Every structure is written in structure tokens, then in C-alpha cells.
Amino acid sequence: MKNITIILGFLYLCCGLGFSTVTAQNADSQFSINVSADIVSSVEIITIRPMNLSDAKPQNNQIHIDPKSSRRAGKMVAVGNPNDKIRISFLENRQLTQQSGSQTVGFQYRVTGNTRDDQATAEKLNAENRDFRLNDEGRFYLWIGGQVDVSTAPPGNYRGDFTLEIEYL
Image (tube, rainbow, N blue to C red; front, side):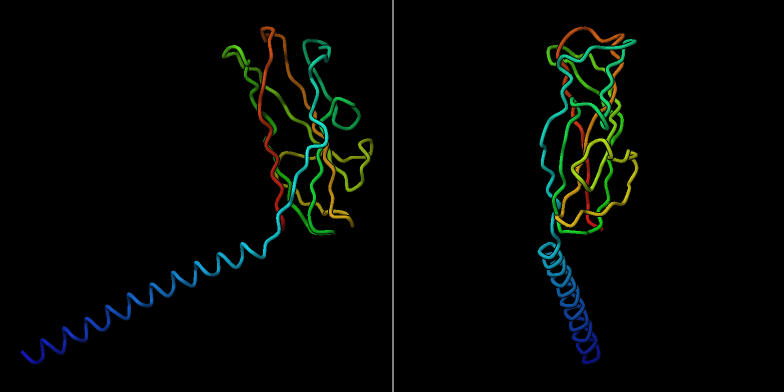
């Protein structure tokens, strides 16, 4: 009986210490997450001008907004820590949905970017992740355009989302 009590006591002690260790590990993990969240800065994305398709005239059943030259292109600026590396990614193909119905049309987004506020010299960005650097003022300028085939689209107002992700490296 004495051996069983000692063994049970030893098992209880081991289980108790094991539980305490797991609890401590969870507490350490939680603490690390909180600390890293406080250290990491965010990149702010400011929309300066939305893309304007409202009175664009189709050519060959296509509306095309060139992000490198069109005044209709949307303009955004990413603001963060000067000279830091960032990664930019976005979904190139999205659906626009008719506001008063269920019709959709496909829209292919085109994006250009530049460390200078100069649309004409901006570089074309591909949809896959790409690394860039913020300028000395912590800015990176983006112009958003694209094209849509309107040959089968009934008249109406269409809306859609464009998601652009920017993260620090």
C-alpha cells in the first residue's frame, strides 16, 4: 500500500508539473504574440482618387483604363517607414455585380507603382507577390486601371471590390 501511495504521489507531482509547464508555455506564447504585435508597424493605404469608369466609351466592346497614362485611373499611396521593404500583391481578375440585378462582368485590374508621384514613369506590377521599397519619405504610389468586356453586359451600374495587400518584409 505504501508503494502505491508513493507512486500515485509521484504521478500526481509529474502531472501537476507537466500541466504547469504547458500553462507556462502558453503564457509565454501569448506574451510573445503581444510583444510582436506592438513592435510591428502597419502600412497605411490612402485612396487619393478612385478609378472612374462612369462615362468611359467602349472601343471594340472593351473599356480600358491604362494605369500608366489615363486620368481615369485610381490613385493610392502606401505610407509607412522610410526605405523599408514591402511586398505588394493583389487579385487581378474580379467580378463586378450589377447593383439592381444579378448580372456580373469580369474585370481585369492593372496596377502600376512608383516611389515618385509620377504616373507616366510608373512600373507595371504583376499580380503575384513582388518586393518594393518605400521612398525616403515612406511612400509608394500606386495607380489602378484595368479592362472590362461589356459586349454581353446589360446596361446598369456595376460594383466590385479590389483588394491590394501590402506587407512589411
